[in-house]
Length: 450
Image 1 (cartoon, rainbow, N blue to C red):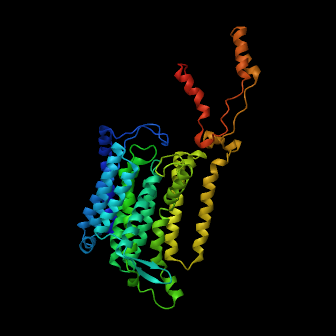
Image 2: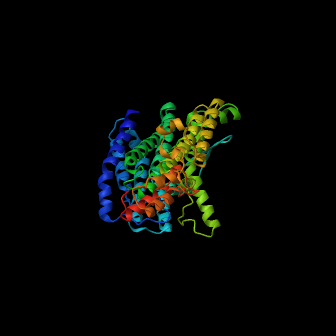
Image 3: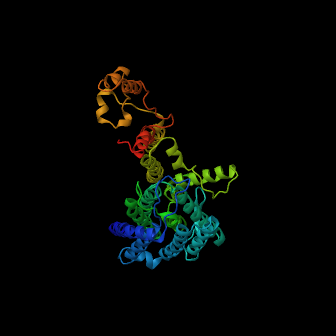
């Protein structure tokens, strides 16, 4: 565990330290595209954050190669080299897209080629554990097609969810943390060396995301761009492929006894078929809904819009940071819920906290629909948006305050005293209240002191 933690820390440190210089390079190179209609940020922000993440990946694999307990991963398996080859290719395509905005079909072809490069070097699905049947071997073409499909789906799912500051990096970090714990349990608990590459990939992926997040949290100073989102999506897919298709379920010696007992005991083996999907369940759902929505409206599936899940959270009134943390919450609930159930599947007590946390998540989703107001005695302890509105001042107060002026000024002051207070639009709530500040901005622009 110490070697994995050291690899994680080195990866995070290199990524964090390189992100600052990469930001300056992105500004100098002009990798700051104009704000598009679907963007939520208001100022041009440099991309190419994937450059720092790629070099963090290289540093993590290099350090792991020189550690005594992790050196065997490189000696006994070609998967780290396969991952590095595919990552380099997909990263190069992402850098070109961040700078020149290449066509979506070209990116899709590049993703398939990167997956094919990993398959050619041995990182592929060889067999599948089927409940009630056992291990089912796959032909070369079946394994290749399944591997390429999983890589492409994961890359695009992560790419689709990369719409808010810190969202993609945080969700993938949560997913990789859950996957690391599962892979480490298979490797250390069952003594299966074939699970070591997946454990290493998950640790490196966590380091890449943790090192980049401080620069990418709202308000972001740099975006990872397609060079980063496609890269971490490929690494996440490689981890799932490695432990799903390379670990032989027969090595666990659990397909013994009756069919029911063997199927129940084999649950830790069947979980890899579901865990890669659960850790990206929200991005995958966003991907499927986006394809259905765009094709239903007669648009291309690759056409950009503002219908993603994170856009919907902003539309119903959540702030930027709250929307991100809600997505974090659901990702962690799904990923770690599946992980916990794989360890203690016989205990039904696991379902109780999962259901409870799901109810809490639903309350958080619907929170902007409600407009809580604090009691009078607690108004001084809460933010202004939770305080009750004060009544309009009486008309005679405005007139009385103008005794030193002429009659015309007194009448004007009286009129202002009877004027209704500024009304906030109906669609604006506490998280996105902007109506009450607009008139102040106009006065300052006109030269009137605030």
